[in-house]
Image 1 (cartoon, one colour):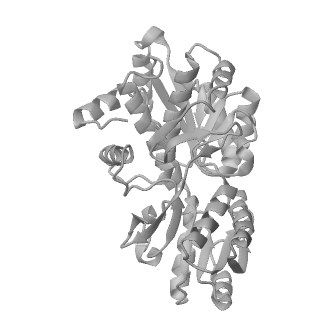
Image 2: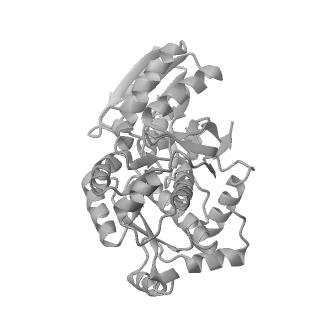
Image 3: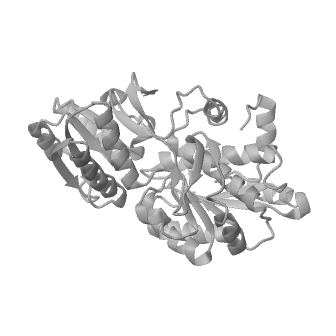
Length: 393
C-alpha cells in the first residue's frame, strides 16, 4: 500500500478494468482491453450494496474502497500476475434485490464476492454463495449468522462483538454509569448489538436504566423513547442502528433539551455525510469503529490521502473495510496460488484453506488474522464528533 504520486494514480485508474456503475461504453472498452491481459485471463471481484436509497452512503463508500484497492493492485501487477476486474450492482439494501444483484454479478463472471454491504441483504446472499461455493468476504455485514457458511468471512466486527466492545469501552473509560438504549427490534443488526451490550453491561456493573425499541414501521418519531430515557436519568444513550434514523433521534433530542452522551456503533458512521444534516446536533457523539481518518500512521495516512484525491471525500469505515477486504482477497489468493481459469468452487476451496494462515496490515487494523469461523482478530477504537468532524479519542 504505497503512496502514489498523481501520475501513478492516473496510471492506476487507467489500468482499472472497469469502474463500478460505469457507462456501457466504459464497460465495453474495459472488456476489450481485458483481452490483452496475461493469457487473456482476469480475476473478477463482485460487490452489491445500496448505491441509492437511505443507506447509499454505506454502499458508495464500499464501492469506492473496493475500486481504490483494485486500481492499486492492478498498477502493481495484479494478483499472481493477473489483472483484476471489478463489477458491482445496486441492491438498495434489500434482500430480494440483493439476490437478483448476485445473479447479475454471476452473469458478469464474478469469481469472488466482496459484499454485500448491509446485514439483511448479506444474509440472503450468503445462502446463494454457500450453494455455489463462492468465496465471500463482507466488509460491513455484522449479523452473526452471516459467517455460518464455511465460504463466508467478514472484515468488520459482528453484532455481538460490537455490543461487547461498546460496553467495555464505556466502563473502562468511565464515560457513564447509567445507560439507556434505543434499538430497532425489527433489525437483526440493531437487536444483536443490544442483546450483547445488555449482557456485557451486567459483567461491568453498568446499569441499564431504560431500553426502548422501535420497528421499521415506526422509525420517524422517537420522542416517546427519548422521554423515557430522560425520565430514567440515563447519562448515556446507545443508538445501535443506522445513521438515517439516528439523525432524527439527535434532532428530536435537541428539540426536547435532552443532552446525554450519545454512543453509536458502525451503523452510525456516515451521519456527517448525510445531506442537509445539522452537524451541530451530533456534537459529542461517540462512535466505536475500527478505523479513523484522523490517524497519521501508515497505511491509513496514505489510504486517506489517495481516497481524497480520487473521490474528493474523506473515507468512512465502510470504505476502509472494503479496501482492506480486497487486500485480504489478494493475500489469500496469493497464498493459495489460485489462477483465473480455476472454477469458482476451486478458487473458494483454495482460499478457505489458507484464511487462518494469512495476516494483513490494513487500515482497519494491523496484523489482522482470521478464525476458522470467519471472524477477524483486531482491536476497535473510538472517535467523537467535535466541531462537525470525527476526532480520534
